[in-house]
Length: 436
Ligand code: R1P
Image (cartoon, rainbow, N blue to C red):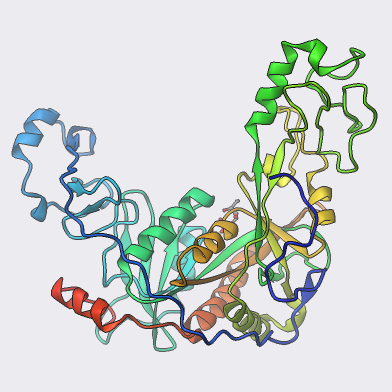
């Protein structure tokens, strides 16, 4: 799908511009969602031998280790620098304790209300707002071998988890799917990130709530592949021999002798009998929607924390890179992205921010058969329109402000509880909840 115009928005009646948020939207959703679809039973025949010799502290040959490997039920769980367990089920790997492959958590350790943050330091900072999950206990904390941190406690009495998600949509995929697998009943997930503000009224230090949903911006490598193919068929690419070696020119005009390219200069396509045939360097998805009620209480909570003048609602764009797909330019690479930001704000006047994860969170929530409610809030760390970057020392206070708002929204959103059947299955498995 290519850069496209407005008209396909699903969100209920958003305005055309990012806007300040003096009041909650009051777009409540009361209908019960469809039952949660659970994965099949664990324990397929697919076991995977581990080469433990490569891990720190083990110098014995892998063959010897395999022979001495303890029964999987006693294998230690996935923590940094330790022996890894045996995983079962190549389709959705978990260890004998039911711990997921990348996040390393199991049922009972993750609350149905999850705050997804980009960094470990943000997770630890926002976790200072939590109380212990149960009297006499510490906050539950787990670090997976892949560096995902999960912290579970209570916020205003409600069990919540904070998960450091790292960067990009693939990491969001791990976080959403693996947490979905270890939580029963409906879930709510809010992403608290940082972002670049792309236009007014969003400005440095504001809290930007993606209540209009998200689009995805992806670099299409085929564009350059097809350019290369055209290089080998020059007669197919250009009729007059003009233009740059890569098929597009500095002024945004098509290099095929067919006149100016369309208004968006990132759209540097070559027309005519060319392998490129109109392919564009970036694809932009249709919007996916935010959970309207969750977003509305998040806006309300954020406005209560920092004041309504510091909260903006609108659309966010999640890019598949920090650089090219967010319109950052430089001489080292041919990214053909000089006009990307302008094209995005032209096609989506309510676009307020660029970041890298919210789209995938909302996309998976949309596909979760009603089992996940999701939205996102970001601190505007940069202004792309002025090229200003916020003083970094101001970030922790804003992370705490956004974290407070997000935790309040998570604690306040109604969720369908696990069914009796689901709870019975958990009891049969001997699941112990860290917040009980
Ligand atoms: C890029 O620097 C990272 O910062 C933003 C982007 O989405 C990307 O993950 O969010 P976080 O601060 O949550 O990581």
